[in-house]
Image (cartoon, rainbow, N blue to C red; front, side):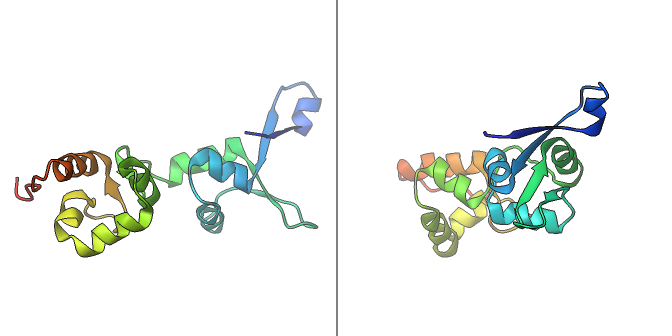
Length: 141
């Protein structure tokens, strides 16, 4: 990841604080999110630095990571549509198709009380293993 290291005014006085600044695309790539999601987070209050002339959005990583820890819940084992497609080694539209056309897939894999595209990694792997073997997934366990 390419980043600009900018000394703060306190660093000039010798405190040692160095700001690590990245552009929005670099930040999104480092977090595994889309630029669109990063822009939505900015609208929700994520700290940023904005250059007025070019309109370029820059992000201070320290402040942003602190904001993410407070405001965004990271759930392990919870996959987005793209991550699920990468895990299943299929196109994300295939995952969408399975969700629309296969109720068993949706019931077995989608995490309840979440958006409809939050998928359980463990359940997806189980479903794929059973699907490859031609077995039906037990929905009532």
